[in-house]
Image 1 (spheres, rainbow, N blue to C red):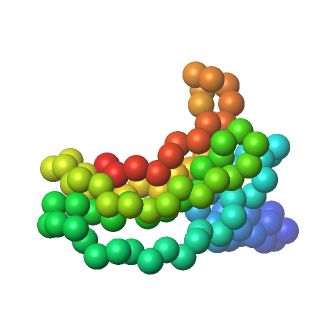
Image 2 (spheres, rainbow, N blue to C red):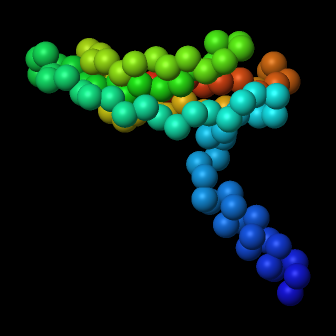
Amino acid sequence: MKFLTATFGIILALSASPAGAQPPPNYAPIPPPRHEHMPPQPHGNVVWQPGHWHWDGHQYVWVGGHYVERHPHHRTWAAGHWAWSHRDNRYVWNPPHWR
């Protein structure tokens, strides 16, 4: 029973936050997103790319949101996340992007 309780607790903890949303150890926690006012759309072939925090090697720096040209293959927004790189044998930051 203790095993099931511990397993459920781990699953609940992992589901409470997106996988890889926080940086690995030795990095400060990612600050909460800033609220941005989205300006009017300049023309019909652009999409809003929300702002995000970027680690510059010493601290997080806010990269403001802006409109980007929509391409046929840009369908969804992929949030930035930390992931283990087997090639580099360390955590690497995958920046947010349209895919």
